[in-house]
Image (tube, rainbow, N blue to C red; front, side, top):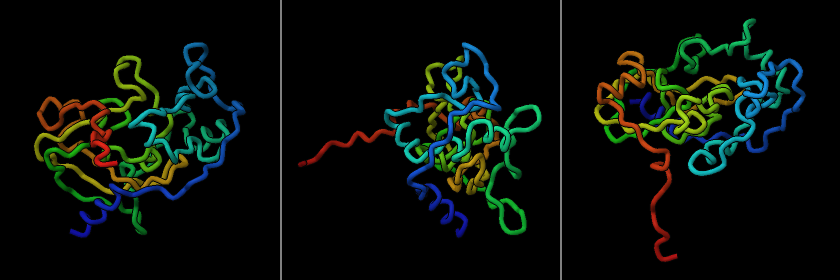
Amino acid sequence: MLLSLILASFLWLSTASAFPTAASCDCTGTRNGGAESAPYICRDSRLGPRVLPRRLPLGTLMADYNRLGGLPPGAFLQKWTDEQGDYKYPPQNGFQLDERGNAINGTMLLEPETLVDRFGSEYGSFISAAAAPYSQRALPPSNLATNPDAPDFPFNYHVYRVLKPLPVVGGPIAPWFGQPGLGAQFYTGGVGNIMALIEKGYLKKEKASVLISKKGKGCA
């Protein structure tokens, strides 16, 4: 019960950082991908698209996002990538850790009609509460790059509706990649990746517009 209450609070958590510091655009230490990488910061796909989403619903998810955590591009990559230049991900599947280094998480069921989402391919096994701010997800900026094989999903963003009780491991997200984290994430690996969950009838794809309120203006 206590874990459920904690996780419920994470679903609505709003990050407190209001005025992020702009990072330098010095591209020293980045990897220029040439003309095909022109849409990305410093032409380096690891740094994500130069232009972030502005329209609803994605624009609201970016409201407090400080892409590089106040660092110049090269310093950001030096801190968060390995010797091969690939991003280093946090331990324990990215869950927040307690004082003993144990992941704070628990098994639970996502109920039918719950909306969840994901920035990334459908072959991954992590989803979040729909419309949670990007900064609370502690993802690298590269997850915002539109997949050329899936152009109908700008910024690699996917929304799903739960169709039947879905067993997951859920918990708060650890700060990483210069982001505060502390949103809620759900690991589906025990049942399958996202594509498998769709095939098994657990999830149904939805348009991102389902997150935009359709309520009228009432008497105003």
